[in-house]
Image 1 (cartoon, rainbow, N blue to C red):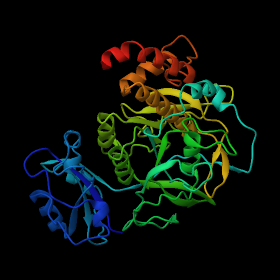
Image 2 (image 1 turned 60 degrees about the vertical axis):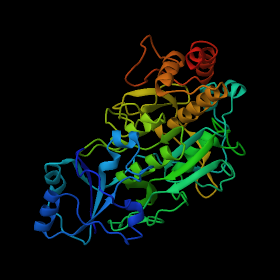
Image 3 (image 1 turned 90 degrees about the horizontal axis):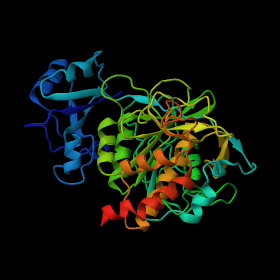
Image 4 (image 1 turned 135 degrees about the vertical axis):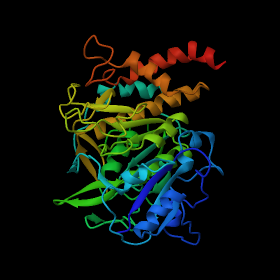
Length: 438
């Protein structure tokens, strides 16, 4: 198995190398860069290892934009070893100690904590929309086509009757070329623009946001545009298909969504921290600096375990409520939960044009992503733009709190109430916010 190291160089002379982006180099090796920096090159030569240097992120401008440079994306590289070397234990940690290197980590496949849906052919219409006051919200706005919600997940069944015509830009970042793929099934090689969902999870999430409402409840933000970004491959685990992916491929998906116009990114997935830098940290900071709102599932083990990106600063970590509006016992609270939303027995679209019922914070997160899409749509209608700080202000004053506390460990600011959120925003748009805009 050919291994990869992701290395971020310290800012300074020699930190910026004109190397090809790794996702293009995998299929086109016409331009080979075989040197990173002298001390690293010497270490690899002494170990007998040959390697290629590629860029971890595709830059949107030569040399990187100010936002890309601010997060060090322009000096982050993926070192791809040229053969199936037996790498010594602790190599990444040794590399990270070299002068001029800010961080180093080995590429690893991580399972994403995804709930298991139950297939269904029909169900009674649930009350999830009523719980968040969605009928009133849609009298105010159903979203706008120029507001884009990106779903980073197992892909999307783009031709599903509920989602046909809803998806704009799309990309598949799953490429495990050279890695151990023993347990993987389906499509796990070669990035392309066909993010077909083999698990069903991403299609379920997408339906909650933008379904037409043919054989299920209409999505929260049916007039917003969906972006489908496949970042999780498929593993066969005890007879069921689950999502798993490379953290760094997920990072590439995040950057793609930001650079291609996402206003909101939904990540109904969570990965534990297993050493080194926090997962997704640099690229999430990049997204936030560009004004993108990132919404993530808090996790489904009901403990204080932290799952990323939900546990990163600036990300809206979402917990789940049950059919009665109480916080679901499976909601993980290690992340600083922002708010809670319906996440129990949610019926939505599924892979292969099907439908399924599922419970989890994965289902709660898209209710919030759709809500943010509606809020950003209303603001745009008034010629204003909502910042992440604005959203904190709105949810703090509109969520339904379970007690007298402004914010709680398990419930954040409280349960999503879209009617109150839009009323509060309308008041702001007619008053303080518009004065600031002028």
